[in-house]
Each structure stands twice: as C-alpha cells, then as structure tokens.
Amino acid sequence: MASYDKAIPPGGEGKITLKVHTKGYQGKIYKSAKVNTNDPKQNIIKLGIKAFIKVPVLISPRYVSFYGKAGQSITKIIEIKAGLKNPLTLSQDQFDLAGKVKYRLEEIDKGRRFKIYFTNIPGQPGNYSGFLKLKTNYPEKPVIIIKIRGRSFKEGKVSNQ
Image (cartoon, rainbow, N blue to C red; front, side, top):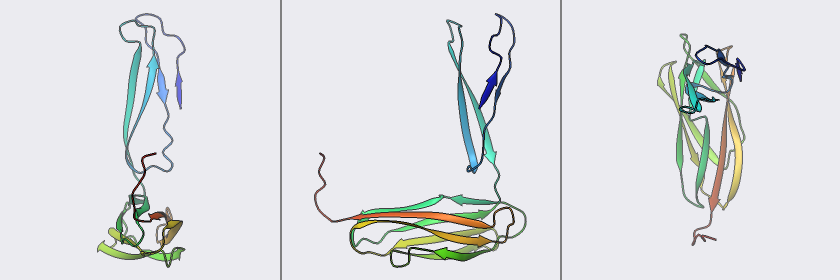
C-alpha cells in the first residue's frame, strides 16, 4: 500500500510511504513500487524495499508437489528451522494422504533444524492433494500445515497440441 504527496513543485521535496503486509511471508523478501513523474528524462522511478521477515518457524519450501509417471517413486524434502531461541519440538497431529504419500521426520540439529522426507507411493495415474499437520511447542506458531499435491500420468507420448 502506498501513500504520497499528490504534487511536488519543481525542485521541491515530497514524501512517499510504502507499507508492506508481511503476513504469510518468511525470510528474504523484495517488494517494489513504480513512481510516475512528469520529468521527461526520468518518467518512471522504481523504489525497492528489501527485508528479512523473522518468523518463529522457517519452512522451506512451504509445500510439496509431486509430478511424474505412474509407478515412479519421487522423494521431496522440506526443511524446518527454529526461529526463536528456545528449542523447537514437532509432533504429528494429522496426515490425510496415507496410501498416497509417506513421510519421515528427522531431527538434524536438536531442537533447531528438522527435515521431512516425503515419498509418493507409486500407483495408478491421477491427482491428489492433502496435508501434514504438525504441532509445535511454540505458542507463536502452535501448528504447521504443509500442503501436499501430486499428479501422476501414464507413460506414453506427450502431445504438443
């Protein structure tokens, strides 16, 4: 969201305020805004904001996507890092893709860093989607939901039409 002085006299100064809503973002972000001017030498000015959004729990990537041939086994990895000083604990709350996907939670650095290994279970062609819901010990982020989707297709020629 932006607010600004509507008109600035030649040689004068003005104020532009940019407001960035960071809900749903984590880690490094970059946002920009274009300012239109009536200066014939520079009619558009680009303003940029760089920030690092600190979150209680850093999840990378934030979702899992499987895409491949039916019968093919694919593994994807998500890393979870504690963003607070106190140790993080994770436990399963809900998982709705049993029979389609299996997962393994591994603690890499005690209370600080975890990896979740997701592997699709080879089967018939088709699409699926679901989630893994984990409980944490952080009141700032009591639940983590990792969305999972998959698409498997029959082997064969792919048409370019």
